[in-house]
Length: 86
Image 1 (spheres, rainbow, N blue to C red):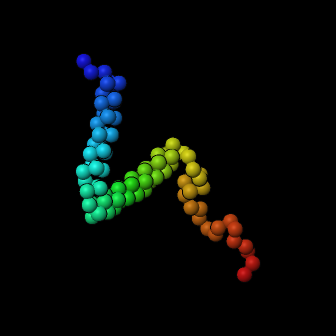
Image 2: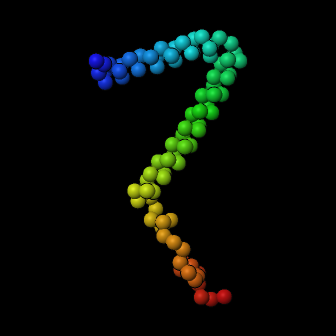
């Protein structure tokens, strides 16, 4: 029976081997391949960062972290900072 440690070790080794094969055989095979590799990596990296940021903000808001002023509904009438003089 395969243990969790064996599985994670094999998974890590497979990912490293996949990256090595991809970089050597695909990305550095030609200039166009390298540009395509960098463009794809940048596109995926930026999208993961943006959606990760949005997800963390949603989870933080769900558990009540962040500004409490933005969670209150607007009050009726004039804002409190407005003066009576015109």
